[in-house]
Length: 297
Image 1: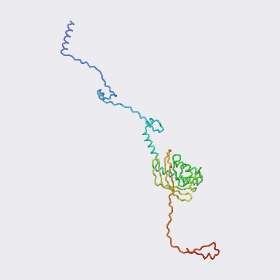
Image 2: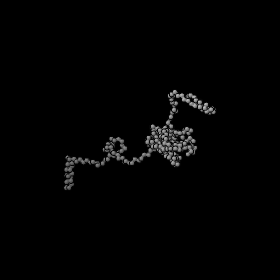
Image 3: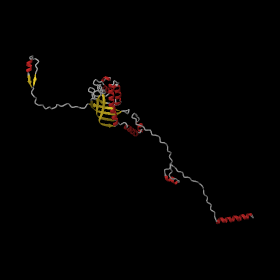
Image 4: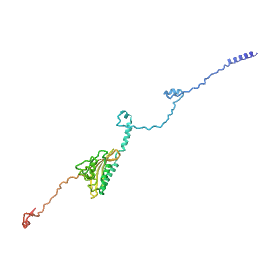
């Protein structure tokens, strides 16, 4: 009885399945993931993977300070110098050179200090001080001896017209008797041949600055401390910045203004009046005879 019922049920179910077939779709649940390849330079491939251009985060780090290499003329390895940044070095050198240019104000300051030094040396001499030591100190500050060549042509120098050394200059300024191996013609310009100067005034005609060198030309006046007489002298000074940064004299030429020889003047003469002149004859012992001797001129 049970077997018949099962067969009947199975038969009915097959009829239903044939009339109303049941479709079963089987889906595989697989997750796919497209990977962006930063080394893939074909953007279309990355786009096909479902990605647009991906922004790459860049980690910012502090930039290390650059060290500038300078050209070393003593470097015999040419490759080492080629590795140096010559252009940057040249730029820095040019900027440093500009700071070393001699200015007009520096020239005027040097002139004022020179004038004051002459007066101070004269005062030291007149007051019995150590004017030689003071002159040596000021000369070292004012002139470039020991730092560069100095072209010095003093005003009152005949036998030794040029003074290329510091000792030669000292002989001229303080006198031959105050230095070793001084020149006999030197009477001491800074002490005005032992009369002293009370005042020195510069009057510049022009000052022309050429980078590290400046030239000044004009006249200066010296007032005698004893007589008050004023003397005018013509000058040409050259100033140069030395390696220690100070501006010193590298050229000094002085001369007395030219005075032409007096030309003979043409004097109009008028007819001379006749006058009697008594000629005395020392060999004539007769006094009366000498009294009678007259001559007409």
